Image (cartoon, rainbow, N blue to C red; front, side, top):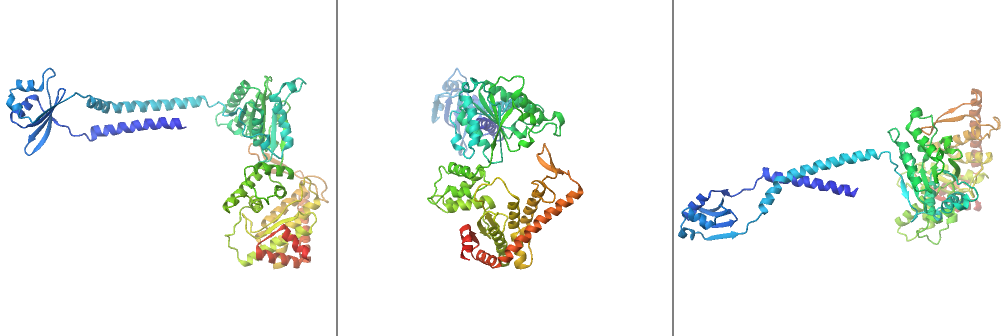
Length: 608
């Protein structure tokens, strides 16, 4: 961009100079001496009015006395005669010539002629340069039009990798799968001698933030082979055929540098089910997908181009992409477990000074469900907090605060809450915490606070003791009862309810509906699912749910959902009524100090 800017600036400067030259030449001409014939010069000399004559070639500059002042006049003489000879020929005597006080002979100069010539032709030159500039701009536009179908990939040679497998943690199985591809690119004979065929395509699947793109960058750093990087959205344009042209150009260049790797990020932008777009079979996205399918496994199969793609929506990809011969292998980038989170914390903690009290294993236990991106954000937030507090190292306090900022948002201590509402919030959060403590399947209470964070006026954080992959019906019901504990506490203490439980109501309704309709956990309706969700493929969003059950069953579903919620609401009320004194104690302490940590909360039960 900088060279083009410099060229444009130079053209604009020339245009400005031309305009200024025109202005000074025509709009504001400088005063010039009056030119007179040589005979009049002779008459002035005879009259004794000439004070000085400057001779520069054939040009004479006279200083003439008129009245009480002096004026300048110019004249010209013949080239073959000197000044004295020319004046003597016109009748001037030697005595009259001696009356001139000073006669100066100067060497002839061409500067004035050059300046005059430049001022005369500069506007024409400026106009010519402007015309050339416009023609070049038009030519550049034509070149851009010709290169419109070229691929917009980025090529990484791998000579100086910025990311390697050491920078990726928590996904050991995925690294093992992709290490095989790196080994193939380094030593293909190791596989070909055994008749093995390396997968042509590897699909990285996982939730947003699990490190799919980071893993692809690590493969580029480890392989040492040419690595083509492009996003799926860069194929598609509003013009028909451009996407397919870019796919062809990408694979043509990749084949010239084979063996190599082509990484397509967010492939679902072009790889969705065909036949579902607004444009029918001639939809531009579908033509691009068709070309990708042909290039990966078409008529010409003797290529050593490995395609790695990433998506978090594998369910909407076209089946032809996922068949053997194209994306043969699917590598799942799952959310890391506790050990994986600890390893990711160690990776992102490099270069950050940590205090002696920091225990990354404890931080890993308090971050269930966090992805690699969440953990990176967590450490960055902790570093910002430490800098804001003028600390030289990141302490455990900053890390715990960062966890809460990522989960619930920043504190909003500036929000003014009346004492009456503050008391209601305290009882609400105390109700959540107390029911969680009493029910065996609920996770331990990590922190209870009535300080507003994000959109919440208060919050209760409960963290599992270990990673959990299966959830039982009893666990679901205990969680519903704990979620309803806040509303139950309001009703018991104040004999009234508020809007503070709005989010709780949405959460328990969603959970109870999932128990009945998705997980088959209803005793009356039996172990089956209800309803089939449909989505608009080209939007990737759910738009409807197709009923595969009758109205009578729908009524039973509603009744079952209501029964689950009501039953567990009564359980929460029963627990809080039986522990009314402890509820009062927790709420009072929350009003006094606003926050209760997990150990402090558990100590209140140990005392009783």
